[in-house]
Image (cartoon, rainbow, N blue to C red):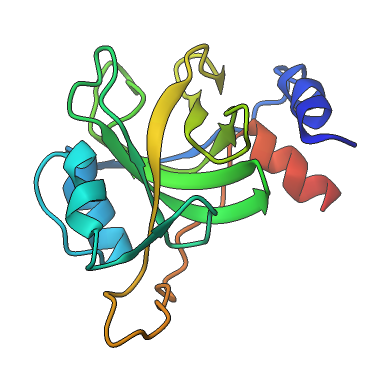
Length: 184
């Protein structure tokens, strides 16, 4: 089954009451949270991470567990966004753990674990994504431009980068993750 067909089927299962785990932790902005979870030591606004990583960390367009996806500034998201990949489901579907995305109980800054994110770019290069939005209990209606993924440990003398060994995923994925878990 193609991923787009799979996602259509899963999106139609709104009646199932499984959601992304909202930890209740209010940690504020996405940047310090992503830095803590990934070990990537970059600072400043989220959108600046891509350029800052050049020469310091490996970057690319392939999702890997522990990598940080950097969103470009767009619309109301003027400072960009960063999210840590908690699980790769397929070439165009991942689960992420991030902070300060959905309004939960009217409040921003909360942590969401195992949130579905899909690649909707025409070339399949993760340059445009859709993200699960807690308030709608569905993939958001908007798509967002991204730069790509920053991977794990700093570059040193041509060494391959190491990804963190921390478990990033939580016990209660969103509805799409729950269906994937049930058939996988």
